[in-house]
Image (cartoon, rainbow, N blue to C red; front, side, top):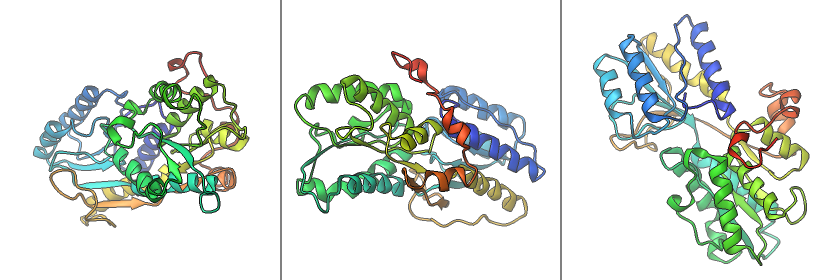
Length: 337
């Protein structure tokens, strides 16, 4: 797993470890602390220990070619988990969600909240994308951009910054503090005398960084002039904000328990002598081949369905939502609770 700074990886790491051990396998779980070199060392260490399978959520998905070649030389099966590993032929399967659809759901939420079919606008929207070294970022971003496209062409939606490319909208390491800094700059440069109506954010940590910047700018979360803010991963603190009307209005839920089940199920199927089930053979090109993939469907979460989708399904408890605090508070000045 890549990091513990996002709570989803804690949940997924634990779920994978439990499911694999329940199948009777020995599981080794390590976190790379957002350090690509450390993750390479961890993977090589696992290969040296004689592992037969690697399930990898890459930190830098272009940095693993050499270590995965070493793994293949030792007969290891390699499953790319959630983030597609690029520039290597040595990936056997990909387990993830429909990442393009994530961006579609985020953009559709913005269109619905702005009521673009009834209101002529124009509405001012800014775009954020994820880390440039995470291949998922391009799918999230493209799904959102494609969904907004016809409204930008007819002038219903304006992007005053003109920043519509992934490179200029990227947020390294998915950092909320980086997003906060960029949002502050956008407000200073383009919104001194203009209203900002929505921000397309690809991940909850980025969403909160944007919210903190807008608060510092003088806007009040939950007020009529506060922008629509999207997100992803259904982190407890963001669900608290959505529930309480405190800035973020939407997130995309990817039930990571199901994704862990897909990846561990692939291992079990291969051990049993069969080929794992896949449902996509021609979308995820990693530079060497289209990697056989199994994709799950994401779910849009807002104030109307968070209870049913998250609490009733036991993904989160009410207490976890009530007690949630910013996991990266030390990055912000002042710290955020």
